[in-house]
Image 1: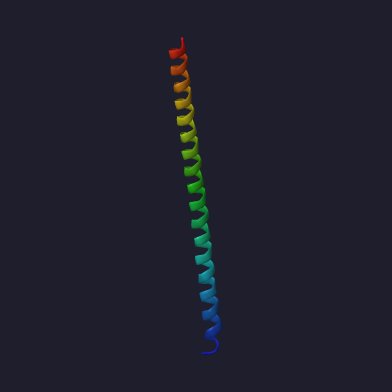
Image 2 (image 1 turned 180 degrees about the horizontal axis):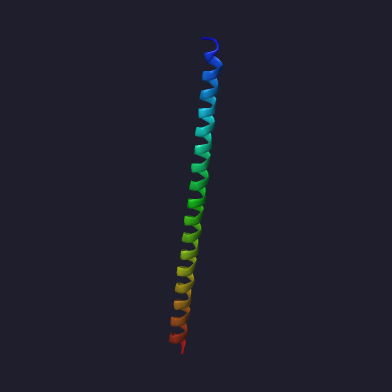
Length: 65
C-alpha cells in the first residue's frame, strides 16, 4: 500500500499539470481573440468617426458657398 501512495501522487500531479497547461492554452487563446475583437472594434469606430467628421465638413463647406 505504501508503494502506491507515491505512484498515486505522481499521477495526480501530472494530471494537475495537464489541466494547468490546458487552462493556460485556453487563457492565451481567449486573450488573443478578445484583443483581435477589440482592435477591430476600435478600427471600425475610428473609420465611422472619420467618415462622420468628413461628411459634416463637406456639408458646412457647401452651406458656406
